Length: 446
Image (cartoon, rainbow, N blue to C red; front, side):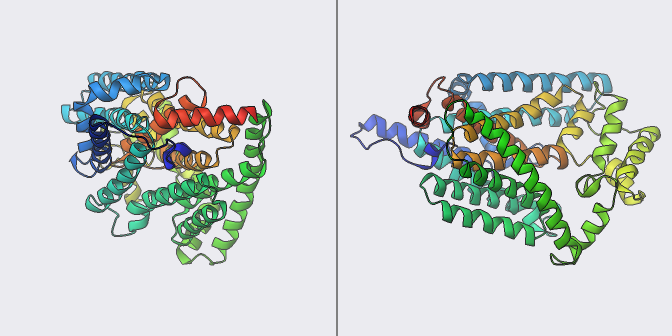
């Protein structure tokens, strides 16, 4: 998602009928890849029409992605994850249905990645079409396939992350055209809306991406090797600002300015041993205790958890939460096997440590893209990648796997992989790649 994604960079020229037909097919494919995320063959596994299209078209999609070294690494790590699932199923004797469900997680990430890399490498028009279709498809999918808590809070449990992402992309498009003030207004508005609606994690994620973008803009464009020192400076200042933001939010929440619900949540969570973050997600501490019992081999999908392991879990849970578990908590975590409110620890506990690299690597790609965009002073890329990094890092640690998380991880990793390839002058890919390499070359000359 470089600035070339949002801006046409090639001059118009006469094209033959064959070129026009090819361009039309590429645009139609981009639309299908985006909107194909609406229908699902199996909602729990997240397998959509898009994944079926990519699977059928692998001879076209795979060679494009295979040119990226990061794509090859991701593919290997996802294969390792799948191997861990098979090994765990043989040890625990999982049912075939549960094994297929577990295998769908790395498969959806891989297929989403291959399809998105192809779209991002076909030029700015195809990339823009894909992104617009994807946003539309994700909104439609969240409305049609409603989460269990959709009627409680549609913004938090369905529409919030996708619409916020849409606003971030709009702000990035404005930044790429030099409309800094309007971009700040758009980002600030969605930040404030998330805060007032009580979606605290999304407010934090949006704030982080906004602050990183603004801080980078304030530093100017340092020459040569000093560019990477700016990443350290931005990190230090960002940490200080987040501490201040934590204090300000705590004051507003505790005195009831943000509403009764946030006041109650803050008073309960901030007074716990784990603080407001871990106090709100005490299952993380319990998960670490369960992982320590069997750090290498998983327990299987929907395992039976012994009374001793449950006791270990709730002992760690109480240590950071300060409360006492009741029937609701005991049923929520262990009523249907094992349910941990964390993608990372859920997959680790189910299928073993071999699942961890395949989950962490996409987030690592986004982190590398953020550092690269900061050093290159690409504010639109900073905004997009810092938002994706913060969002997926939060989900990885503190959210359960939703129906479309394979799409989120795979597509975000694809955007980061293409950006990293083009910015490092390895091999320019398509219109987006050529423009990015040219901009990087000119910036180095200045």
